[in-house]
Length: 138
Image (cartoon, rainbow, N blue to C red; front, side):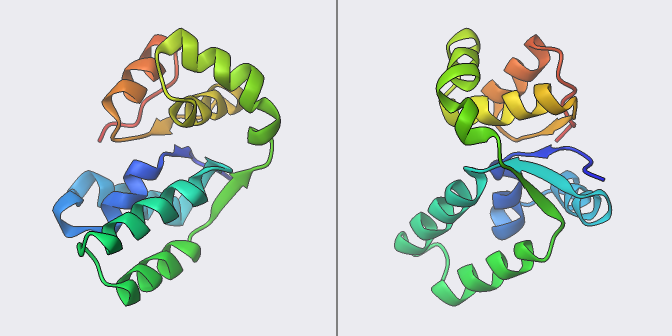
């Protein structure tokens, strides 16, 4: 069972104390219990945030590895349809909702699968509301 679509911004909040919140911690528990669904770009996006943080001295490389390993134990399922939808449905949704294609990939997945969306991204949250996607409060 997959409980909701998980945006990278939530996973990032699990990795940095200054981005942590009780709600994001509760979402971590929910992922552990229900699972989550992510578009295929999620792994690259999360890796990019972590490597950029390492380069800026915000986190040590050993801590990056530890955090990514812990996230890897979670029941997070990768959607394999994202690439085939990138230049059609996702691009159209990005245009319609004034999103990046990255953000639109999460929204398209939530719409297609009829799942709620968890994100810290205000623009993506607004687009979700505009398109009738249930937004998980953060």
